[in-house]
Image (cartoon, rainbow, N blue to C red):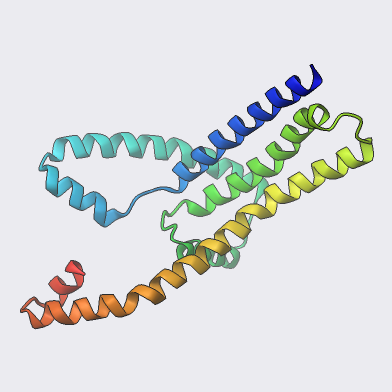
Length: 192
């Protein structure tokens, strides 16, 4: 019976982490502005695009208001620190003006949620564990939640730098071909 309960709790933990990861990834997936403009031009229906844009702006506005309150209370930063964080997030590919707020919200959420999940699920997974080890493990889960997003952003930065380094020669060759074919530099740059 204890192993069945442990498996059930492990399944619930997996489901909660899976839903959390999907939610976090959807927060960062703002989409490329060029792709959104191209999609609007292809459909040719500016009305549907404006309705969708209005709905997205309303959701974004509520989210940003909540994040402003959270940021002001928990993570006050100097302007130079904000600028450094903004630059790191842009290097990682997150160009949304509110990416810094979202980053802090995710760090705080994970730093609070991971220890709580461990304290709820841990006794079922590891029965008989000493209280000192349980507390230490909860503190370690909080540290992972706090520093995990920083590690993830650093991985994104290095991956994006590698992608740019590898694709730059091809993009430059394509730019030369487009200009030689008769396109102006601006048109060739947009094409590439």
